[in-house]
Image 1 (cartoon, rainbow, N blue to C red):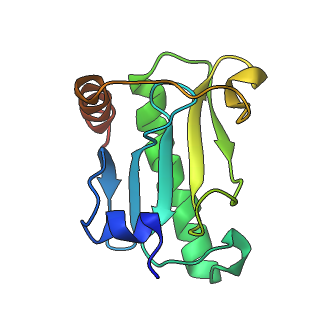
Image 2 (image 1 turned 180 degrees about the vertical axis):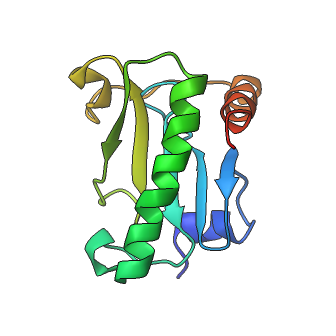
Amino acid sequence: MASLFTKIVNGEIPCYKIAETEDFLAFLDVFPLRKGHTLVIPKKEVDYIFDLDDETFAGLHIFSKIVSKAVKQAIPCKKIGVAVVGLEVPHTHIHLVPIDAVSDIDFSQPKLQVDQSEMEQIAENIRSFLT
């Protein structure tokens, strides 16, 4: 059965898309820790990040770096925190979270409720910084 993220890749579930290549997709997390919280995934469904082949693993990180620079420019923050938890969805994904303190990337804290129009605005703002 296809993962939630594979359904997003296939267009079966909508997302707030940030960037896309032939192999990777970045989109806003709909349950963000902070505004601008972005998920970066390989389009190929592999549950565990360390089971990715070397080329996909490296490409995912390079794509994440590109996306993180746009997020950093679009969302006021000190840094972009990076996390790979791997338990919520059985599809490799990297969390890019704008942070000002370590506590900003604490996944046990309540998630933000951001309305659709603001999510669209955030995604557009981040996309505007992609080169």
